Length: 485
Image 1 (cartoon, one colour):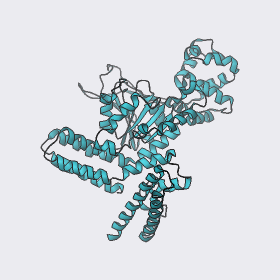
Image 2: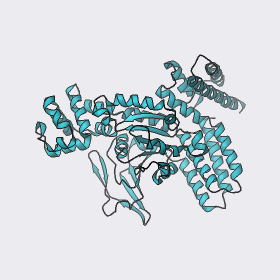
Image 3: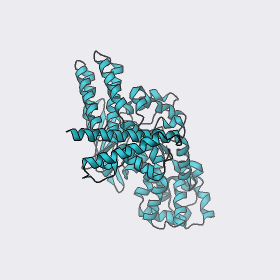
Image 4: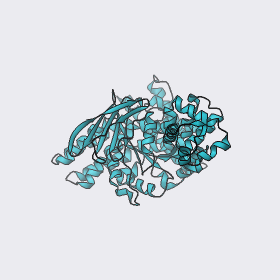
C-alpha cells in the first residue's frame, strides 16, 4: 500500500465515521478536528519526568533559546513569520503575550499570570526546523508507578502524532508509562511513533568526557530488550544541555572557557568537583562570579569540565568547540532519527493518529455503526504495510538486524527510506519507463523472497526480508494498476 493509498483509506474511514456519528455532536466535532489535523504539520511531543531536560532538548532541536516559558502549561512551537506568543486559559479569552528578543532566542513575559493558570501557550517562531513539525513541550509526567493514567500523558497521546520520550535509563516507571501508547488495536499493530531518548548523558558515568560512548552502548543494550523494542522505534542518547550550548555558544563564553583551560589541570580540578565549589570558591583564572554562574547555566559543571578538556586538546576557537560539543551531545544522531523516522514518514504517523482517534471513539461511544467501522479499521490495519516498513527502517538504522552494508542500504531504499515513489524505492532514474520499473521491482522481489526463506539467516533477518519482499510486491501491484490505467 503506497502512502497515497493509505491516506485515501484513512480519510475514507474518517468520512464513514463522521457519517455514522452524524447524530452525536461531540463525536462529530472530534472527527472534524481529526480531519483538519490530517493536513497540519506533524506534532511531535517532548515528554518526560521532572528535570528530565525536556525544555532544554527542545531548545537544542530548534537551535535557539525559546523555552521554557511555563512548566505547567502545554507549550506549542509553530513556524511563523515573526516571534509571537498567545496564552490560552479556561477562564479567559486567548490573550497575546509579550515577547522579547535576545541574542540567542526569545523570552515570553508571563507577568500577571499565576502558575498553572495557563493551559496552553502557542509560540510562533520563524525557524526552518518548524516548517514541517510542530514541537510540543509538556509538563512533567507523574512520578508514580501507575503512570499510564497520568493526565498529562493521556493528553499527549490524544494530541500528538509522535513522541520523544526522555528517560535516564530506559527502564522502570518510564517503560510502564509507555505501555499506555500500546493501548488498543492500533497501538499494538503500529508502535512506530516513539523515539526513546536517553537524556542528560553528559552526567552519566561520573561525567566522563567519553560519556556519550557509554550511553550509546546502553542504547544498544536497551534495544536488545524485547520490552523496550516493543515500545519504541529506536533509542538515542542525547544531552540537550551540551547540544544547546554548542548551538548558541558565544565568543565571551568561549573566552571564559579558554581562560579556565589555561589553568593547570591539578589546580582547576578541585573547583570542578561540584557546581557550588565552582560558583562560590576562589575564582579560578580570575573569572567574576557572574561569568562563572553564566557558564554553569549554559554547560553545567560536567559540561565545563568537558569543554575545558576539549579546548586543551585542540578545540582552540569558538566554532571548533561548538561543533565538538554538538557532536558529543548526540544531538546530530537525534535530529537524523527525528527526520528519517518521523518527518520523512509523517504520512504514516498522521494515519496512525487518525486511526487511534477513530478506535477510541468506537470504544468509548459505541453506536449503530460501530461494528462495521471496527471491521473496516481492522482490515485497514491488516493491509497497512507502512507500519511494518517504519519499524524496519528504524531497525536498519540501528544495525539491529545484522545485514551487511550493501543489503541494508538496498532494504532501506526499497521500504521507502530514500523516497516513496517507485523510482526512488528502486534506485533508478525518475524518468524510467514502466517496463524498466517492473523488471527492477520483480528482480528485487525475487532476491528478497530468497532471503526470507533462507534457513542460514537469523530469524530477525528473515523477518526483515519478508517486509522488504512485501514492499516489492506492493510496488508491483501499484505498477500493474498504473499500466491498467
